[in-house]
Amino acid sequence: MSERLDIVLMARHHDFSRSRIKGLIEAGFVKVNGEVVTKAGAKVDEDDELDVFIPPPVPAVPEPEDIPIDVLYEDENILALNKPPGLVVHPAPGHLTGTLVNALLAHCPNLSGIGGVSRPGIVHRLDQDTSGVMVVAKTQRAMDVLSKEFSSHANIVKTYLAIVHGTPVPAEGRIENLIGRSPFDRKKMAIVDRNGKVAVTHYRVVASSRTVSRVECVIETGRTHQIRVHMASLGTPVVGDAVYGRSRLDRQLNPQPARQLLHAWRLALKHPITREPMTFEAPVPSDFML
Image (cartoon, rainbow, N blue to C red):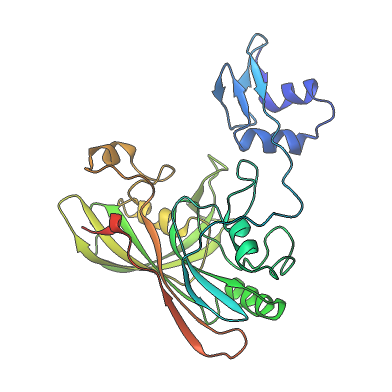
């Protein structure tokens, strides 16, 4: 008789709560017959082989590491940098070291504890595979101001570049809808009718080839995976996007994408202390050239 995976694991691991078990499953730490299963409600049989990997705890205080940082601007209050693709922003299970936070603690010795010990100075983030501009607070006063403005989207203008399959129609437009957790896959975001947050993206095609286009996206809101979800909703998903993209089309490209082609190109804001308008721009990566 089949039973839910989370129920079976709770019976075997009495010291774990149901939420802990669910978290391990959804994070990909559980295998059934050698295959990763990420749905807590997946049915398993009595003779199925279950493997559970317990990730090591994240260190309470990240350690400084000598990792190069591409600095675009720096003063005593803020630092703007060009994050390379592949760099994780802060420590988490599976990425306990080698993160941007570890690099920042080495570059700015006084950063520790600003805004919290686990994510010092971090006022916004980019996906691991997304490159481009990030700004970091170096003082608690700058942290307080920037955190509030990034949260409310006040005085913040974010412009991204994306390489997408095909060409969006129309070539310029505005997308507004609700984005929330997918009701079918809790690890994905989706356009929803309710229980979501308003997401607004302005897009414009700036270059095209026979198979792909470079699109400029200005976002009024900063929802999780917003641009990736919105581009996919137009039928033109971001190239190399393993979650919302089309792997079959990715494999037809030459060269094939090594990552999702999304780049935080430009970030405009007001300096948290002087209130001077500032704009930071990260050079367009070579894999964005059509």
